[in-house]
Structures are given as structure tokens and as C-alpha cells.
Amino acid sequence: MSNEDAKQYDFEALRNLTYHRNMLELQYSWVIDRERKIFFIHLESGGPEETPRHALYWDGQLLTLRLEWTSEGTPYGKLSTTWSLPYLFIPEDFKRSRQEILTVLKEALIVYKFYAYGGQQVEHSAFFNF
Image (cartoon, rainbow, N blue to C red; front, side, top):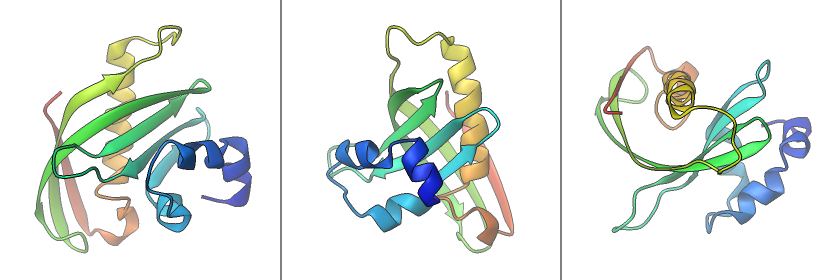
């Protein structure tokens, strides 16, 4: 995340959404579509009884979600990840359908690969249970 992105998308407010305050790690745990002004970010890993928290920023709104996954392979080689979505918060005034949101989320997760290791993975396959 560049300094310009951090200012444009109010990165400080994102950091305040989580107990995880490690700015450096958060800066690399995201993917962005600058044309559509949409980004997906991993906020925190969760505890033993919680699933990890993520956010999808779109149309100036922040949608929070929890994702679960299983992976096979290695982050630096061939890897497959299966994603499940146990929780998705959509603000009442958000003007996109749930189906549109799920489509964009899937697109983001395909690019994100696994913890934004993106360019380091030789081959990655994403599967969805939502």
C-alpha cells in the first residue's frame, strides 16, 4: 500500500477496526482494483474461537466479513485454497446486490491468492463454498 493509497482509503481508520495494529503487515495483506476503487484486505487472524476478519471496500463503504479457508501445497509453489464465508456485513444503504458483492469478493480472492503472496506463487487455484 503506497502512502497515497493509505491517505485516499483512510488506512488509519482501517487500523482502528482491528486489534492487529501492525501497519507493515496490513500494508501487504491487501489487493486493489484501482479502476473500480475496490480493495480487499485481511484485518486480523482471529482467536481460537473466531474466524479471521477481512474487509471489502467498495463505493466508499467498508463491508466486513469473516473467511475460513483450507489450503494444500506451499505458498511459494503450487497451492490451492478453498474459501468459505461464514459472515458478511453489508451496510443497509449499500447499493450493490449480494450476488455482485460475492462476485467481486471471488475476483479479489483469486488475485489475493493466499495472504497476498500473489506474485510468489507459481500456480494457485481458488475454490469457493459460497
